[in-house]
Length: 245
Ligand SMILES: Nc1ncnc2c1ncn2[C@@H]1O[C@H](COP(=O)(O)OP(=O)(O)OP(=O)(O)O)[C@@H](O)[C@H]1O
Ligand SMILES: [Mg+2]
Image (tube, rainbow, N blue to C red):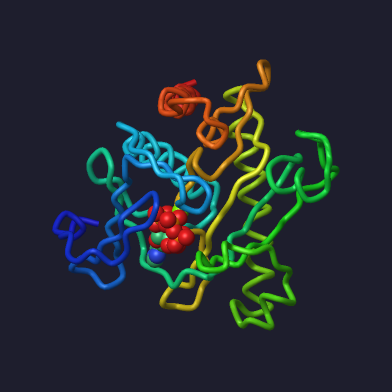
């Protein structure tokens, strides 16, 4: 795709908590810039963290590429520079899709289970992506009533989410990491297809070292345990070396 060499960054479309999205000279391509910033509690707590953007950008590039190689279509086009990516522009479906393999976070809080209690099969949960409402939990029928997605789109999301889960479990197993849970976002392309979008990084996953049970993700920040960038960097290095092996 030689013409992609001429992609130019244009206007800032959206400044989120983790990334900035820019339009480009191609209507179907967005320019993503990963920020050196981390937030918790829906943005109420915000801290600058050097090198976080480049680490998350590299991890996300790696995982989107791995998934594409396994036949899972996604918005990633290519990485351009240390903190930036080109992606296919989609209409984001306002459902945050959480896939859980064992109990953590809001699941433990809601059902008072043991932390890391294993599930016989993965659990898919939806949250309404709506900052003003604090991203509330909802079910498929709520999503249909609110017209956030069609029944076919929800079923496609569930199907892709389970495939992504199977591949990510294997990818992380190889680097001695347990995939506890993660959040995905999906979008609709200009041809009407549902594809995986947004990012795949330790900001959106719960990762636990298989031996030490240490958290290797944003829980370090949520729990006030200090600088998480060295740990994210460790995940990146393990992923890169796993590729070489
Ligand atoms: N391919 C894409 N096309 C259009 N929008 C996208 C695409 N991928 C991700 N986005 C959107 O871009 C934004 C990315 O920014 P960021 O992750 O910083 O958001 P955020 O602070 O988590 O906020 P939000 O609550 O809106 O997700 C998100 O709103 C995400 O849904
Ligand atoms: Mg986000």
